[in-house]
Each structure stands twice: as structure tokens, then as C-alpha cells.
Image (cartoon, rainbow, N blue to C red; front, side, top):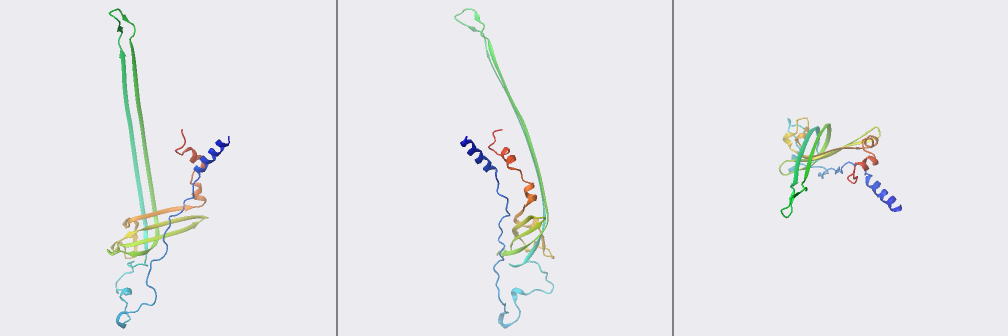
Length: 216
């Protein structure tokens, strides 16, 4: 009895889950030369900080901020149908022993087997909004590596939006905004924790019946 109780506790422990946490993000700002910048040759002009009179304020350097407009929408549909049939039969004719009369030994075996199955799955997701990120690095080819995270506290629930990836300077608009569809190697995560997230998760008994260990 004690062994059964211990086994039951182990099975119940397997149904427990760790609350989802947002992915870790390096929120530290990139290394930027600090201190008072001086001009070259005793002048007051600083080439690294100079702006053209008609230039815009798009993010071009490490430490600049950039607003990403989230425009994500995905839809996937999958369907599969399987069917197979198999028929087999064996027939034994009356046997004749030593030239005598035929014995009533005629018999037959018929076997039929068939299987039919179908499955379908449809999934649709959408994410809209905006998040402002920081340029962490400028690659030699001009790509900007961006990272950022937004945390919202709504009615005792925490919502996290995390984004990272690479963008081209020419894809950034004059208003210093860029669509999330223009981000290469994009990693976008939207998670949450709190009462709302707990309400959307299945209970331990439901997870037990849906686990692969259930024989039914």
C-alpha cells in the first residue's frame, strides 16, 4: 500500500508545471564611449555626433532607440486522411486417404481487416502593438542588432513582450519606426503571469489524463 501511495505521489508530481517566465533579455545598454567628446584638431565639430541640416533622427548607432510596430499574423491548416483494407482467405478441400472415399474435412478461414482515420488541425495567431528597443550593435555590413522588452502590469497581471533581431537602416522609416515583418532572425515572445494566465492553464488532474503515461 505504501508503494502504491509513493507511486501516486510521483505521478502527481509529474503533472505539476513551473509557471512560465519571460525569456531572459540582456537589458544592459551597449558599451558607448562616455565622457566629454572633443572635436578633432582643436575644433568644436565632432564627426561622430554631427547631423546634416536635413537629416532625420533615425536610429543608426549603438545606443539609439527604435520603435518596432508589431504586425504579426500566422495561420496554419493541416489535414490527413488514412485508410487501408486487407482481405485474406484459406480453403482446404476434402481429403482422400489411401484411395478411399473422401472424408468430410473441408474447411475455410476468412480474415478481413480495415482501418480508417482522419485528423485536422487549424491554428491562427495575431499580435499587434508596438515596442521600443535599443540598438545594441552595428555589424560591419551595416545591420543593426536590436533588443528590448516591455513589461505591463494590468489588474495584478504581468505581461511581457520581448523582441530581438537584426534590421537594415534603409528599412527604418523617417519617423524612426519599422515593421516587425522587416526584422531578420526575429525572436518575438508574448508571455504573462498572474491570475489570468493561471485561469488559462489546465488543472493538474486534466494534465494527468492528457499525459502520455495514461494507457487509455
